[in-house]
Length: 277
Image (cartoon, rainbow, N blue to C red; front, side, top):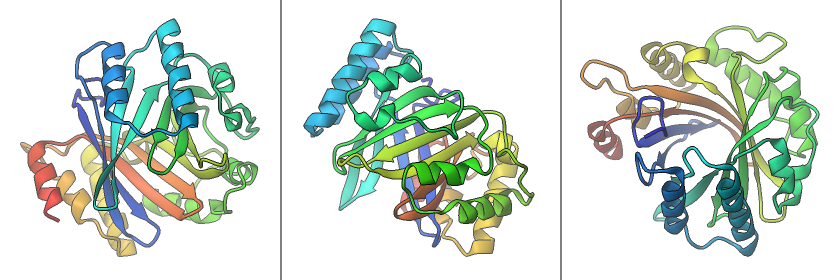
């Protein structure tokens, strides 16, 4: 699978709110090794219940993939919700920023002056919450750009708190440009078209070092803040003497507050241990 850099068809995400509550999410490759069109078809079939507006977006992206090609097509997301797990559809976004403006969802055509070199990567559709989310690669974001983005999206002014969290996590002061060269951004909108959340992403190894060092930094950070870390500790436990691969660190600034996340690929034994936490 090309879902994760090490070929695993499942990627887990540990997420913590600013109060330290812990949640585990997962992303699945619905057909490892299959062509993008088959993966997309299986992902679409696995996530029913989209709203009319979400269905229109789905069909527009499917048409764009058919016209321009697709590397992986689509994934399936799993998130805690109610008494079980709710599903989320992820579709690969081919093309450039102009692809977004052509999609039938007005907020996607909005210009964000703080963001440079935006390259679309994924469309996320959550049928339960009615949300639309765009994931994109971006040029390194200026430290002051985070506050500008929040203002442009009419989101709460959480930038100072988020930058303090990032400084504490790295145990280093921030420069005028946020750390690491390869950065990503996701923006989530509600069914009424208002922005609900902004997430800044970076590769974990570039931000915190190799997996073993990153795990040590995250656990120490959580301990300092008295956060719940039992599920992440189980997910990231050594397998055959090695710490599982860590993918992305995310910093989410939302109407509901601040959150920190990290993705990792792990084995079934660790997942079963995590489920008992």
